[in-house]
Length: 123
Length: 132
Length: 251
Image 1 (cartoon, chains in turn purple, brown, cyan):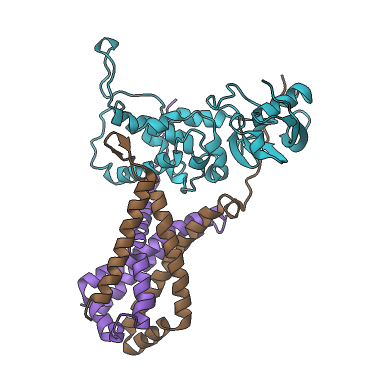
Image 2 (image 1 turned 180 degrees about the vertical axis):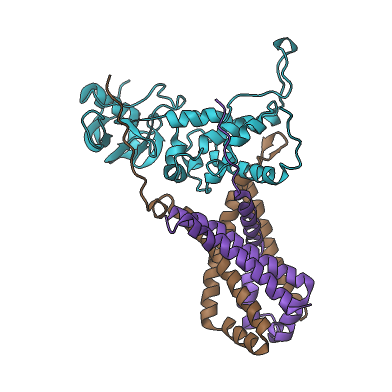
């Protein structure tokens, strides 16, 4: 008896974004936290002016800098969104629509807002 | 012959908090903290757009003890994410058969974890040795 | 030859008689055991000497038929493959496989599981059908390795009892069905993966899995169903985006 055709799930979209964010954070997350959370703000091995307004602006106005910031912030959110969505489902918290808005909705919003901020900062 | 009357047991609602699933739930929540780190970066981006004054306030907060504690927690969670991510990698990819025998899953985990350590170390090294 | 059973262990067995019981309850038995006795042999001792009405499934006694799966101290195990001496001093709880309806005592309903196995078209669909006179379909050892562990499934259902997502959603296709699906999809002689995609790509297909991993931990045959399910997530995700590029079969 063949399986009754089942409706194709849209999960692949979210799953691939989750996978991209998971891989990016697994590869560079520890290094990123060490740099932006400890070395740069504490001035350990990094000159204090590295985090100056001018330097940060120059990095953010560079197209490559923009791409890195956009990828890191949005993909990290998409990664967390998938995991939080499934964990909230495990925990029976909120309705399914509520869970989707809180997780995928927030990730989509952050993706758009980050892109908007990066454009507003200019080139 | 007796009539069938199958008994359905309820699923405990808190199964995710019990053994052996606690480990799984912690793994998932460690992934959620990655968004908290991204939110810190996002707040920096907002401060940058607001101008030099806002940026200096954000920079000051980033150097504060509260930020250090937060980043220490995020670092531990990120290391846990890295570890578990590559534990699952051999389950997500197709089975690798090299020279007629399957590549052990432990080896795939080891290679993935090593690549991640190299990537993060390279990032830190780049920042430390790049003349700003 | 026969060792004297000078030690005893308490088995707390979940009992359910659909004709008289409103719900299941535990009953304790003190079982004498020897070094070589399994939980299954303990249950057989109870049935032979204390209570003939105790109901459980078993057949081969050697971890190959997959009939005697039950929850032993809360973990899905084959009763024939679990030694009483490893559970001493006890007491040991023995319950029917989790997530399945209980028919009677330790016997669960298997209908849903069997339907799921059927749903993945569990047989070879050759690329080029040929008559027997043309000889066998040859395969290299490496091609065999690609799916061999998935072919070791004995349908014992321990993985379904271990899977919380199946417990939450009985419609989820589940670990063993996906392992059996991958046993055929991964076979170089097979060309039927398009027929099996319906069992995979829905919400209750591979996407019902959250990579808990308990299924692979409890598998007595190292089938690694978690691997089968999760590699099909990648296959399905690629199919989701590439399906428009593929030629549709004319019907």
